[in-house]
Length: 196
Image (cartoon, rainbow, N blue to C red; front, side, top):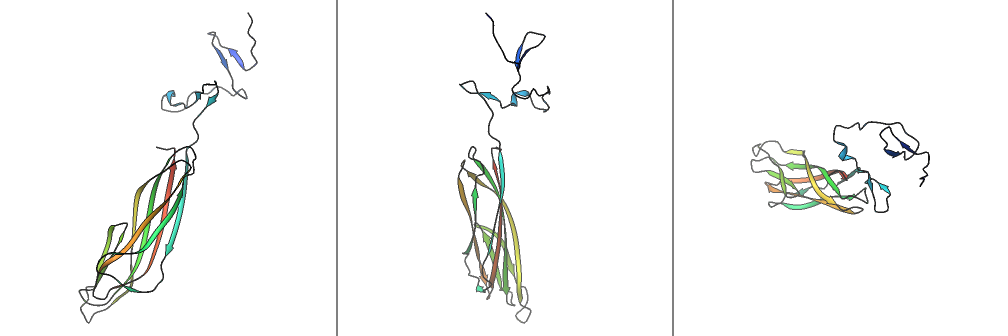
């Protein structure tokens, strides 16, 4: 019985039959330090070749600010702003891990007096407290600002899905007539799909 094959097939010196898939490319040794078992090529039940989809990554940026109007800093921490960012998974095949960085900058105005103080929190995490050490006849601290950055792994987004990250911003620990003004924020996120 004769078996007919096309020119893509060839038999080596040991009698092994091989087939070149396309374009007759030159032979190349496995160039990676890991074992060849990491090769993702597989055969489906219908004998078709497949490899997993490519991993994908993207960056997302959002920013915002409040008005410059000054308000009294409350004694207890009170939410005064929400920083939000919409995350879309760039892959319809893999869930994505989200790594986020939030930066918050708050303006404070502290009249003179040792009891004049203020602070703020981001996502329930107390970040900064400031106090004016000047005596009652001293100098007010006007338009000073405190800046913080915080990095976190913000969970996962399902394949093809989206998620909104929300970071509440609160001011508090107010005393002695302290005020806060404009709050500025920026969120950057790195979205990694298929890289876990």
